[in-house]
View (spheres, rainbow, N blue to C red):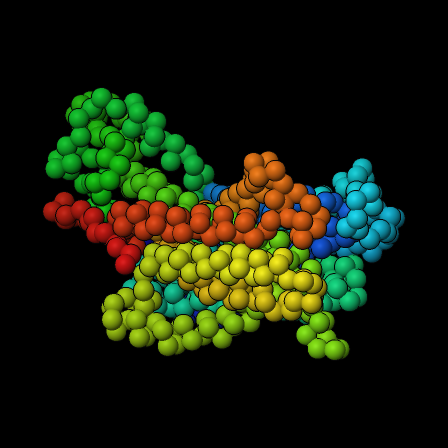
Length: 569
């Protein structure tokens, strides 16, 4: 009998051939897409605050919010991409459609950056009171935000499908594929780091020294290469066909559970639970969120065969367990939001922090402040292979886990390390402010905060994606993967909210266009404290988490429910 999740088709809709379709060879084309797309958008997003501040003439705090709102929207729209993929289009078609939308956004940004008449009049954003440049308004702002959010729409809907489509090239129900799947996630992060590294060095250098129009133009060309990489693997992909709306079965569970809220649950009586007798593949029944089990209790008429119950009145155990999975992972998801709020600072205020320092490394070489974000990725280019080839085998001997440590343990390690990124940032900012001349302080002083966060990202980012994908079930792979990106979204939105709240409550810690008059150090200390509290909150929820079976299993009536608990040390 073929499992539902093993059903896959080629690009023509025919059944897959295991000798031709899938595997790391097919996934390599997806990894190319990952690297090129990340290279294109990272070059824009990571140096966007410079463009918004210097060319669009928005105030510094508003520029930071423009960037964080943009990045937040990119990741929030990943939910839309995951939904469309799982429900209607499939991951390949979704990536193709929204990849071209993203390409259109890059093209529009390039055009505006190239023609001065489409931007505000040239003006150096001064630090003196009374010296103000004209902020972009009207058609200038309309064109800028239209281009920016075309990029956000395309990239957002593309991102979750890159990971899920690549992972779909492996038969995740085959235990022999578990190690390969974990290796793919590490390779995907390696491709991510490679794209980020090139963007933050070569492309940002081009933007700084040759103009933003040339830099945006290169991003446009790189995005075109990403689409070529995707299309090149068309005949080799395993494609999971869409299965209709993923929200309807979820809604049916809540409606059915509410309509039968007065019924008594008898878990020991398996015959009362719909879907427990038919011998089909299903998720193991668990005892958490037991109120939802009422959705699969047959009515008296249904058990006697007098009346067939509507899907809105009676759901299968499998449907109920799918909803339980979603509810179970929400606290884990929520605990990663502060982590991404820290990332937002490294892409905004830390760039401006570096711009106020001495950017000359030698008498002839000046480093663009945005390129400091390349430091963690430069380190990770070496750390990711070492993690896969050295750490994983050593940890496997101790834990017996194929991936070395569990995804939850990996996420928790990263959340703890991230706190020290903000501690380092606060200490350096204090030193910069008290220095007799901040412009004489080397920009390399802020490198440690990027290095520390890069190490934390190696654990948290990859661990979270692996965790969500392994928790997903048929028809929900892209959507649950999108939840990991939604964490980025909420983190960046929270950053915008925190900046506004801190300015209002503190009387203006971050309200000036001059960091020497701001208290960025206190803001960093605030984030360090929030990050530490968040880590202990994560430990609480991770230890309460009852891990769902990672595979669908054929459960007989005599099988005992699984309720194993995964503890994060």
